[in-house]
Image (cartoon, rainbow, N blue to C red; front, side, top):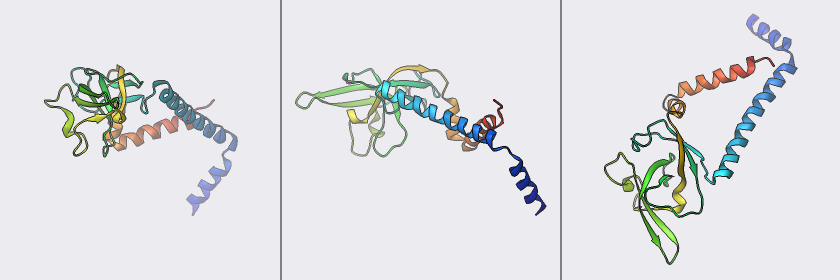
Length: 180
């Protein structure tokens, strides 16, 4: 009971104005990050303007942990381009090279076949069951640049969830403890 009184006294002793200012600052940081992300989506035409390479399938061109910058436009996709695609039933996008493109002249649609540079065969085993080709709707964007190894923090937070909570906790403490 004594512990509860001490905690209650500390809470009453806190000044509301600094706590409110820190909460607003945190909200502004989060809102700014969201605005920047949405702006990138509009500028690049891609639903996900940045992706992290999660496997070794594109080595030696891209290493695990590289961040790719994506762009999507109306230009037709050609063999040799590196694309990021998402297949029905999979949550994680895949980064691979286009090896074949079949254009249907009557409908102007394209069928796309991809392959990881470091993989022995094409990606038909990764596509949805019964699917032999990708269509334009599966393509999230084309790789237009990359930042080597910058995505390792994302990989670490995905593979070790406790690390994610530690990073978020430390950042939250930094925001709360900072004095403006």
